[in-house]
Image 1: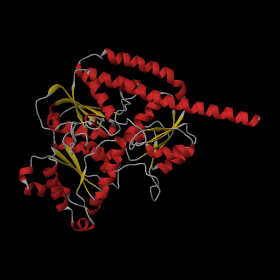
Image 2: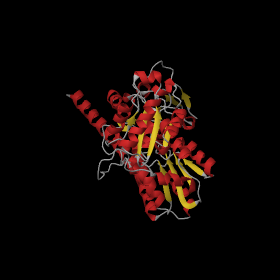
Image 3: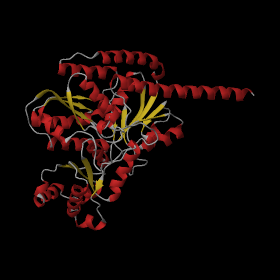
Image 4: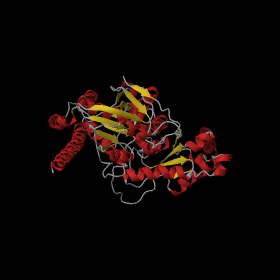
Length: 444
């Protein structure tokens, strides 16, 4: 059981966490015909847009209520109203994701009342879904905002209906890339099941060229699919932060669920495929049986490079958990763990201590590690400590192909093993060369 240490510093230095508003925006981008609308200043929206554009290298549809000093003091009702009307006129979204920010949360805008008044004033727009999420910057982190957006989706949009035996819901947390989501969908479909993924980033941020520019999301979970969620026979929640959304569906529609905190590593993937086999009545396809044997061989090939290696992590809780448990299954040791927000998983980590902190804390704790795992903001620390960095999380702006990268299933686990093993191998070779040069210099 880990001891979770809360920050005692007066200020955050070199921040690790991203805002809740960014997390909510990311989740909304997994719905088709969506445009996220941040209720705050233009700067709040611009910052979120820059982070997502640099990370995914894609066009990110995002709008703002453009609060000014005056509207912040007098109230933002008119800004919200005008922003929605402008979006309806200019881009005709199928659904709008309305997120608060630290600015409007601090002021205390009554968003429920603002939306109620809007519906009364414009009854012809009552069929336009507007998903409201409270996402203050001053508490929580990206994972919290993402989870809150998913909870809003499952509260507002699904409708009751006759159960469809082979239809299942898949709630996917912020720990997973579009490539991960695509891999999960492929595995589920191989068992003859029809998945509704919420949200489906693999159809919107997977890095594909559309026939024409669209100011709203061109792919993702459709509104029609979201309406049918209440007819599903089962819900798979991938990531602990999706548990509450799954429980909402259970409460509203009596849909049973199971939470998988990770789908990387031999045993977790075994458990996931067994659950799919139990749900569908279909045995595990030969394709995945072969991939399992390939993974076993990869584990044999790479375990020499993982054994007793000290790894330091700076990640969001869901991603921290899945990465830490995977590394420990390969014989590595978690030297330090820093995260962004509270989670029930943190106490369950089989390490001594987890710090809810920033990258300054990470830099101090990571001394003596063999590997760092963090987002691209960990590059300076990596160079300062002369420790290799493996990039995970958001943002990653100095590597290509982030949208398609995968770490789930037998295949994704193999890729992760090879990527990490090659880093260890490369660093060992560099150290060996440096030692030989040092001996030569000493002799001559």
